[in-house]
Amino acid sequence: MTAAAIAAHLHPGYTTSARPMRVVTVRRLTDDITHFRFAPLDDAPQVLTPYQPGSHLIVTAGEHRNAYSLVDDGMFPNTYGISVLRRGAGGGSGWLHDNLSEDAVVEVEGPRSMFAPVLGQRGALLVAGGIGITPVLSHARALARERRRADIVYSYRPGCGAHLDDLRALAQQPNITLHEVSGADATAELLAERFRAQALGTHAYACGPASLLETYTELAKQAGWPTARVHLERFAAPEQDPGDPFTVTLSSTGDRIDVPAGVSLLQRLLDHGVEVPNLCRQGVCGECRIPVRDGIIEHRDLVLSEEEKALGDAMLCCVSRGQNIEVDL
Image (cartoon, rainbow, N blue to C red):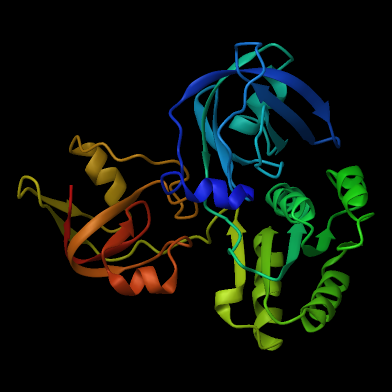
């Protein structure tokens, strides 16, 4: 049974509650990227919750709760591994780099799935830019384990590529190919060629900076790929305009909450004592998804599919807005 099949038996997202875990590995991959591996506090061997490739953990890093992609294939794990890019002072990534050493204890939530493979795919084109290699490596390892085909494109600046030894080892298998590239123009040229070369039934997955993802989606369109076979995961969303003010009704109490321009529905719900799980507050993680009973939704997230948006029964309240919304809270 594959990791994806195992995960399918679990609750959607198969979230596990927050728990402490021990740091068992701290390994520097590049000047700015460090690999951390977590194990249960109990030293007895045990299998952790399996997960679909592309899943992530949420790690409490000082005052921050950040999501980090898991890098393994998800099948019968006894540790969880993440690789973290230091993004600057004052953030969670900096806290992890500065404070975690072996035997340290951190609070971990997950695994959670937001970037899963499509069951039944014949193979995958996997595209990564920089630290976006982490979920792509997870997908590649799962495909290699299942002896399926994977065509990997990894774009990185010289000296900044992470997990290169792991990727090159995978590429020794006959069904795995690896293309390493640097520079925007060379990356675009290679991507265009790899899109044209894929067999029917292939799905494409990409993670990386916004510029790479824009190139990826445009080249997929030019190559005639249907959107249902083109998948991506974003680090952050583009900046949004303030939007128009609107009013939300809580179905449980009938209370009406005004949401001014430039203020999120999430913030107004929290202000009124309505607890809503949240994380990125940019519409890219899916944590703040809430059910909607009525109203016109202006979807601004980068998580829900076009089919899910058309249903109109859910919204990501950190970014999306609307008219005469009634939420099932």
